[in-house]
Image (cartoon, rainbow, N blue to C red):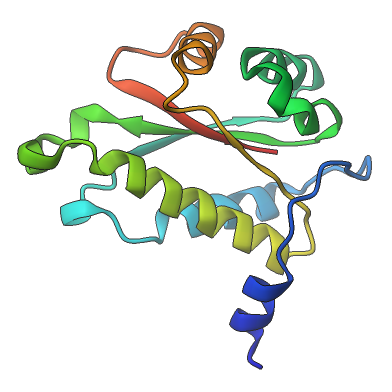
Length: 151
């Protein structure tokens, strides 16, 4: 089995993390992997909010309610968002941003796995309360819609 398939097959959701910092280089690699996935008509209609501040991670967990407890012990959180200002190219199927966000999140989770970093995907969209909470927490403009969180 090649390295790519090993990474895919070995990936698991990690809910308890070691208290080790994640390097700037690793964060950049994870983000680059997210941006390397396909998107509808190459719109690249995503936006990412990177959080390493422990207090803000706790607030992110609260904003996503009880299902986001892995953030409480994480050293990194990435809020994956859709950027609706970039969806004008596919007006007949504007909701493709959701799929594009899922692909970006999956790529980031696989990149983390390949770097030896555990991760956990936490759903936000389409639960209005979670979307509204994350939007308020980060004071996001109307065209940026929270999709999911990666711990």
